[in-house]
Image 1 (tube, rainbow, N blue to C red):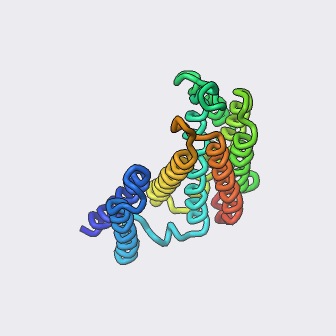
Image 2 (cartoon, one colour; image 1 turned 135 degrees about the horizontal axis):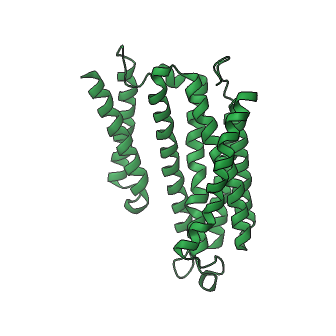
Image 3 (cartoon, helix red, strand yellow; image 1 turned 120 degrees about the vertical axis):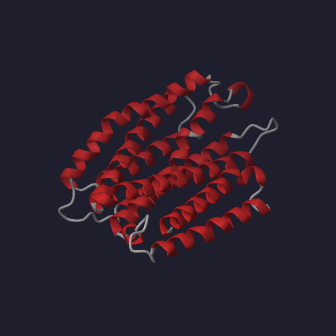
Length: 269
């Protein structure tokens, strides 16, 4: 029964939070539905955390989540999810806008838009294994911080240079060098900081944090784009620039937070 209660409270809290964040732009952030869902999410998550501390075998051990490596890895994951909206959400919208209509963009088709994201995907095949090598040599917090730093550089490039297609491709390449390294190092930190029996729960909660960060980032980006529109309802170029800068700033904060991680000695694999 206790496990059922914990699972129910966590599910209600996460679903309420994600629905409120996803629909906030269309429903209105001050609407009764959004405020009610956010209130329900807060109550359910607090109740879940309290309930999990009162059972001998909780679904999610709060003490495990409070460990320094796990806590800061999850915080970095939240920030990384937020920062990712600057590439995988904003870039497709930017390149598909026609320059003849808005004065910027490349009028890319859906297929061409996918090609702009290919460099980031290909870079991940290289940087993921490299993060493991660096982690074994110097500790996983360093590739985690380096990955977020590279993401910061890539997003800064998008904010400053996006007049030509090659500039967007180059920025996505640098961004793609960073994020896969971050995720690989983050997983290693989580695994080495918890007991083998806690690995599934710990990595699952890290994924939840990244998802929440991505939803928040997506909504921030949407709010910025809709706040600065031209006569035709198309976002102005300055809106994209602002969103890229916010995403870059978030990634920089993530790089700093990653340095606060202190992996357990002798547990780095």
